[in-house]
Length: 86
Image (cartoon, rainbow, N blue to C red; front, side, top):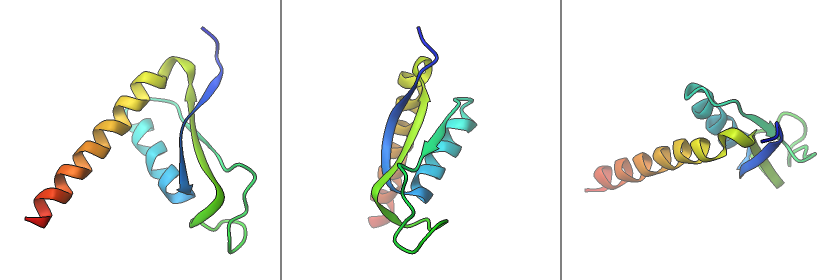
């Protein structure tokens, strides 16, 4: 197994990517972001949508575990959304 980093997911904004990274790091999964050389619509530091998105990368050894963490978060968010509608 190599120490290569793999793109786990790409989000439209840096803010979403930062949230995912925080969730992964809280599960003790190393993660980093690649802003894909974007500056953002309103200049450097802008956290809104970008043309190429912001990728979240994790080491190869953590890919499956990282996917499970983010899938659990999305499933929990969906359940909370459904319960707030009713």
